[in-house]
Length: 350
Image (tube, rainbow, N blue to C red; front, side, top):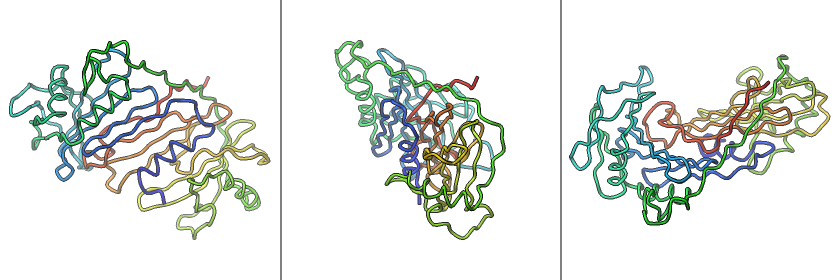
C-alpha cells in the first residue's frame, strides 16, 4: 500500500494524463538538509536541527537567473496540535557564540533574516561554524551536516558554480552565464458541470472496471478495484461518475487504504461509457469544481506531507502543482515548509 510520502510523490509525478511538457524537477537529500528545485528552476534548501532533537528548520529560497536575491526563513519546532504555535516575541541569530541581531517576524510564525544575516549564516553553516537561533523555549541549533552538499546542488541546478553569486563555490565567471529562469506552464481551466455525481450501476461497473484497470501502468496500484474487499464503510466498493461537461465525466473509485492514508483512482470517460478511459491518478484524495487534489501524510503524526493537483481544461486533467512539506523531522503538524516540485499558472475558467 502507498503509505509513504515517497510513493505518493511517485504517483503525483508520473500519473497525470496527458503529461505537460516541462523541465524535470530536482530533489536531493543529504543528512540534515534537503533541496527541491521546481520546474522553473526556483530552488529551496531546507536545513534542520539534528533528528533526535527537533528544535527548528531554516529555508533558503532562490529563484533562477543572474543576480537573484537569497531569502532565508526560520521556523521553530512546535508539534502541539491542540494550540496555535507558540512564537517567541524575539528571535536572534547567533554564530559561534556571537549575536548577529534580531530576526524579522514573518507570516505563519516564521522569521526572516536580513541579507547580511543570511550571508553570514550560509558561510557559517557550510563550514564549521555553529549557527543558533535563540529566543524560543530552547535554542535551535542548525545542523551543518549536509549543508555544503545541499548548497552546491542549488548552485549546480541554477548554473552558478564558479560565479560571484554562488552559494558554495564562488569564482569569477560572469553572472550572465547563470541559467535563466524557466516560465511556468499555463493552464486554462474550463468550466465544469454542476450536475450531481451518481453511483454506477452494477452492470456499468462490471463493464467499465476491466477498462479502468487496463489503463494502469506497472507502478500504478488500485488493488481495491481489482479485488474488492469487504466494505468497512458503505459505498467503499462503488464506482462514482461525476459529470464534467456535455461530453465528459469523471469516474472515481477507492484504490487503496493504509494505516493513515487512502488513495482514490480518477479516470476521465465519455458520458456514454464507450471510449477508452483516461487515467489521472490512483492516489487522489478529493475532487471538487474541476480540480483533483492529492494530500498524503508521510507518517502518522502528520509532520510531513505530499500534495498534488490536477485541473480540468476541457480535454484532460493537467497537473498544476506538486510538492512536499520537507523532511519528516517533527517540526510542525502539517509540515514545516512548502517545497514545490512542479508549479503552473492556472487561469480561472471563463
